[in-house]
Image (cartoon, rainbow, N blue to C red; front, top):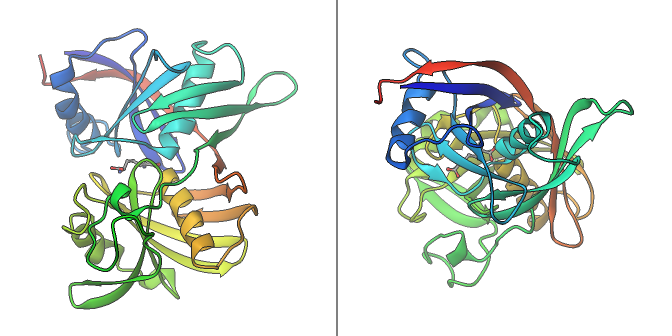
Length: 291
Ligand SMILES: N[C@@H](CCC[C@H](N)C(=O)O)C(=O)O
């Protein structure tokens, strides 16, 4: 099977984008195709697969599949790339439009110069974070189903960590480190992501606070492993940092990720605003083993 694709990335968090306006994939093939294209040796190499397609509720719809083929509810870097893709392919008529993800509909703005050219910056209103434990979802080892998970003891692999959990439509757990270079991303990341306290798995983030306007962030993503950046994770880290008193609500925070920077504010109306780049790498045709 030959599949036309575009490879795009947001701060090095790369996905293979399929134009679902032009090309219809059979549903049962998608998880396997996500695994195939993501493979850096036998495929294209990416953190997963994203389908950009028509929506009944918004101007455009995003479906995101991790490297392991699992479908995720949301993807911040993916939303910015989908916005660029939809705008440049003429699937939306203005620079402000709505994108449907599995977790809900968000507002996107692609930033243009005065000639109407894209300036490699997209803002997404990610909506309000979800903070109730049972909706993250996380079990009640320490609290009740409706409380918030802020600076809670979390033992894993005989390490005593302190966890804050936030959902941006998808689940995140945040741990603070004095020095991000020492963060146990590759050792504890794979253990925490499948910890039974998170019944649907979790994206695992380690954060160093630089000052009240700047944080450093590293991630082990559920279904994909270490990635260069995670947009929903960076949003969750800023919300977590407000909840823990490290940064202020309403102020823009620069999040330094392995792949570059994002600018994120948790606004007083409770919505999280994310701004950052979206880039196209290559277009081509993938020769899938699927028939
Ligand atoms: N890289 C993404 C998040 C992708 C989904 C995540 N791995 C999950 O399973 O929830 C982002 O930029 O937000």
